Length: 111
Length: 117
Image (tube, rainbow over all chains, first blue to last red):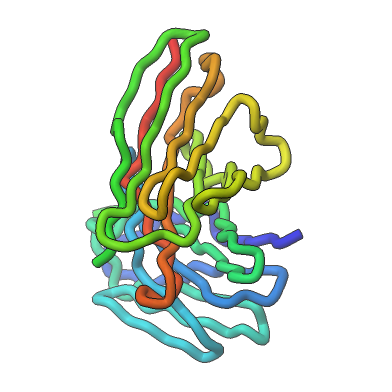
C-alpha cells in the first residue's frame, strides 16, 4: 500500500525564517506534486516534480525531489505572512491512475 | 491553463435526500476523473476514480451504492450522494487528468461544500 508521509504536520514560524517541509513516500512514483490550500478553498498547484534531482523554485518556495530516497522537500525562504496555508504533497502513480496525498502541513507564519 | 469546474459550489440539503455534484473539464478532455472528500483540517481522501464510459473504481471503504458516479463524457463526471446523512457533510473536490497534451497532469476543481441537515 502506498503511503505518503509529511512532516511536520503543523508548523508555526516567525516571518523572515527559513524552514523545510518533508514528504516521504513508500513506492516508486512517476511524479510528485506540491499544493497549497487556503481555508475553505480547493487546491492550488505549486510544483510538479518529474524526475530525480528535479528542483523548482517560485518566489520564496523551492521544491526538490530525490527519487532514490523517495523524498521531496518544500523549502521556505524568509517566510512572509502570506504564505500561511496548508501545504500538501501528493504522489502520482500513472500505472494505477491514482494520486495519493500526504496529511498536509499547516503552516502558520507569525508577523 | 487547464480549468476544471464544479457545480454547485455549496449545497445544503435535508437528511434522506440526494445531491448531485457535477465536475467538468472546460478546455481539455479528461482521460480520468477523480473524486475526493475532505473533512475539516484533514487531507484529501480519494473516493473513486472514473473513466468515460466505464464503471467507477471505488476505494476501500467507500460505498458505491451511496456515492454514485457517472462519467458520461470526456469532459463531465457526476457524483450523486444518495440518501444523504449529516455524516456525509464534507468538502467534495473533483479532479481531472488530461492526456498527453497536458502531460497527464491532474487539475482540481474548486470544490463543493455539502451540508446535510
